[in-house]
Amino acid sequence: MWDPMTPRTSFQVWAPRAGRVEVEVNAERHAMSPGERGWWRAEVPAGPGAEYAYVLDGGPTLPDPRSPWQSHGVHGRSRCVDHTAFAWTDRHWQAAPLCDGVVYELHVGTFSAAGTFAGAAERLPHLVDLGITHVEIMPVAEFPGARGWGYDGVDLYAPHHAYGTPDDLKRLVDACHAHGLGVILDVVYNHLGPSGNYLDRFGPYFTHRYATPWGVAVNLDDAGSDEVRRFFTDDAKMWLRDYHFDGLRLDAVHAIFDSSAKHFLEELAEEVAGLERELGRRFTLIAESDLNDPRLLRAPEHGGFGLHAQWNEDFHHALHALLTGERHGYFADFGSLADLARALRHAFVLDGCYSRFRDRRHGRAPAGLTGDRFVGFLQNHDQIGNRARGDRSSHLLAPARLELAAALVLTAPFVPMLFQGEEWGASTPFQYFTDHAEPELAQAVREGRRRELASFGWDPHDVPDPQAEETFARCKLDWSEPERAPHAALLDWHRRLIALRRREPDLRDGRLERVEVDFDEAARWLVLRRGSLAVACNLSAHPQPVPIRAAAPVPLLWPDERPELVAGGVRLQADGVAVCRVA
Image (cartoon, rainbow, N blue to C red):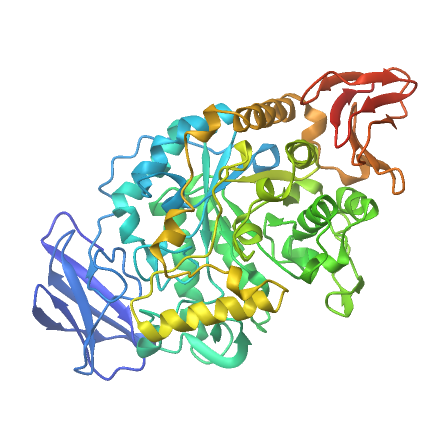
């Protein structure tokens, strides 16, 4: 850490596998002193911005595992950063509670033409006008090359150099807060990328006790794992403390393997709670999980891990399969109105019942948990980007179905989330892209991508080259679209829905026992009741009356012409939707 009162920096690194460690600063090497449990330390003349690297047993220079800045990429030298020097303007800031929120997921590299932190900041007024409360940023930890999704990061403490400097990221967060927006950062603690991953040279960061889809597993319960766990919990607290993020989205926690008596996720939640008490700020931890396991969200005293929310994949799968008719892969378990109704009433569809996709029982009922502990969505980076062509719902559905889907997402008992450009039906895809310099790795990524998607039934010839720069370029949002037809109408529809959600307490009531759903599988209609409001949906190919079980429903919101009132309900056009007051 940089001490402004002296021209010296205290360097410290955990390297239990080394017999001798040096730190090289400005081409001059300094011996480090060994400490307890594999830690090495040295005080060296250096200041903010100084470049440095570690040398283990006389070998090549290596970046700091906890490098705060990799201005030359994953293979370059690290740079010192003084996190206390930034002039924040968000004193006393508190993000809105997630239960009252509307989340917007974005990818820094494609959200703006510039593809930088500064470029993203310029578009914040659009999010405020839309009614967003929380921005969720896809991973920004240093990853290989100049472009990528960020899930193959290797320098977890350093913001990606192509997006800007550490101060540029702080300016983005500060600007979000100035606009009244909370900021959630997507972090990846289940694996690291292959290129530029030097951690194993320093210590036992990985274990062969488990296997993951991405290779060797992170060591959270084998010999030497105490410091590995600390590496990740310190990283989480660094983003919250030094960059003022309001929460973290934890990627694929089902691939975090830990047989310890206290699971890593419980320890992480405890550490973050301690930081909350220290700073007087409220933080949110959101999990992505394929397990349908409510223990993630239950309090530790009830056998849980104490996380605050999780993505609700079942709601997405039920809604997507119903609207598109797709049944490949995990969509094999979904597709009926009954599935969507079950998701709306109980959060999970697969809650211990048989899964055709897995050929076994899956999940557990989240009894006692409220709907606002789940994040609901029609689209996210995975559900778009893991399609062969990266096609969005706007490529798969007619405008009327997009409006119906938006109404269900934004009136469901979950915290709603939109993916960048969804609000105007962006025509740009979101495809998988990488920038690996190693030819063998680049080819392995190409082949692996095509092989993986072929296993889900996609034609490998439809998969664009992840390494091609044009694959990345075509994913950048076109910011001229929101101002013209047909995008402007869909954008207005999202604005009105979000405003209604924020205005009506019944739509933010997370109590699932108060959710009522009526549907007719044969007639293809569904009505979602949220207190005094009803969301009537006609999913048939022809106009028809939709019964609401109310003597005199009053239409409040509809996308086009005002729905016709009929006895006990409303008459809707094909794929029509209307929100009505019923009490």
